[in-house]
Length: 86
Ligand SMILES: [Zn+2]
Image 1 (cartoon, rainbow, N blue to C red):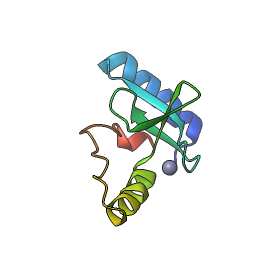
Image 2: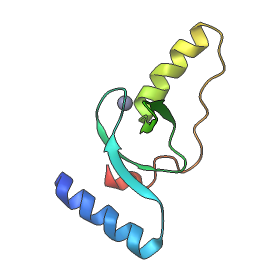
Image 3: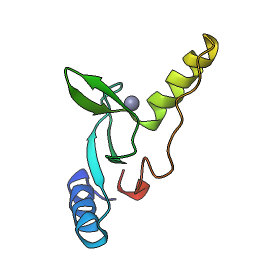
Image 4: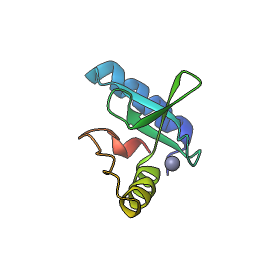
């Protein structure tokens, strides 16, 4: 089983070799650390800083948005790539 440190190194190497925009950070909603595409991930602006939102929190938010009749947040393809680094 890979440690979080291994995951960070793998993602850094992946980014360097493949040139993808891969980032690792904590979800603003649940604080879980996850990997995401910094350009595509759903986010919220807090004090001028763009904070990423994980897939679970987007799903939870969309349930509430549906209840009150709002359009769901649409996930862009690749927003959470590469998923094997989670
Ligand atoms: Zn979350």
